[in-house]
Amino acid sequence: MLSVSNVSVEYGSVRVVRDLSFTLQSDEILMLVGPTGCGKTTLLHAIAGLVAISEGSIGGEGWTSCAKALVPPEQRNVGMVFQDFALFPHLSVIDNVAFRLKDRAPADHWISLLGLETLRDARPARLSGGQKQRVALARALAHEPSLLLLDEPLSNLDAALKDNLRFEIRDALKEAGLPAIWVTHDQSEALSVGDRLGVMNAGQLEQLDTPEHCFTRPANRFVAGFLGEANLIPGDSTGTGIKTELGLITTDHSPALGSVEVLLRPEDLQVHVSDGEVQARVASLSFEGSTVLYRLCLPSGLEIKARTSTDRRFSPGDSVRLSKRPLLNPAVFAANKMPV
Ligand SMILES: Nc1ncnc2c1ncn2[C@@H]1O[C@H](COP(=O)(O)OP(=O)(O)OP(=O)(O)O)[C@@H](O)[C@H]1O
Image 1 (cartoon, rainbow, N blue to C red):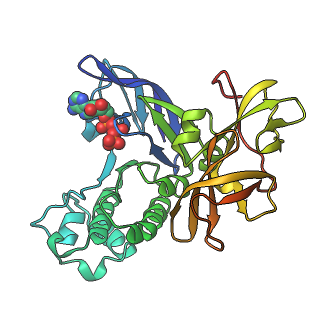
Image 2: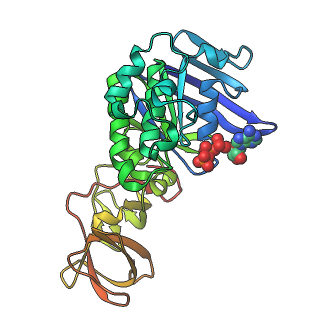
Image 3: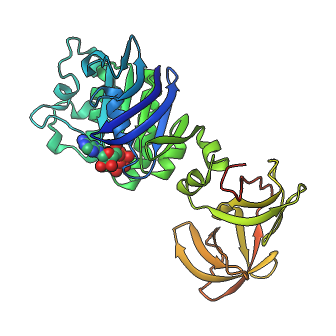
């Protein structure tokens, strides 16, 4: 359990974290994303006690720290896992994991659970990146923290390894019953691993919600654009639906009447040879493996993106037809830039 209340952090005269509040439940994994420099690492360091807060308070199991009475890091029982693993090169795997432990049983437990048994006596130089990160995680967990902070733990690993390791780490956190905050720059990691997702911008949380809600019901345009590609289609809300260049769009929201923008993801659109509702011209395309992302020009000049399977390929300059996927229930923003 962690409680962050109205926390601000300043470096000199620059306020990097601004009046930020949230709580974390006892075994909850919170993924934290945001543009570079928005204050994610600073927030983790403030929670760990590595930087001082200038306002507000942070409370963990058995401690509360505020600007006037800072609790030192060693009294917080907060573990950290970094992107560069931070292992001792001269120590074996078991000695890294059991470093400063009186009882080495938890080290044995996590070495076994994270599949490091055969590498117990190896030095870090012999390990792959994924193995090093497992050792770093085992070390953090073996010290039985009451909260774990992970700062881009997988960013130094290749894509194939990341895919498996992210779920191994999640399973280990759940097995330990530990709350965790996990900073990432990886979209799919952010959306797939955690119980909740926090989207930060300029030192503040723009949205804190389930990953699904952040993606399908973004609180504002920033969140919509930050989590994946977003087409914001201008429209006129009449009460019964929204008239757009892509046809009438209905949604469960009760959008403000008048000018609005409808959020359609590239996946919400289908590209056809002849039977779609709207004509468009292919401006460019990028092959993504199992999908193709098309940049399309509508008759009004509006550019939108559509992502389709690779079954049928179109080329730049081709005239195509577009349709919306059925069962759309998109987010809508009032044209005055406030979320509806
Ligand atoms: N020790 C420091 N002294 C002064 N400014 C700092 C210090 N550490 C970070 N900053 C500044 O604070 C801001 C937030 O940095 P922080 O590292 O928290 O961002 P971040 O969201 O983690 O970025 P990234 O995604 O690139 O890791 C940045 O403008 C950074 O330059």
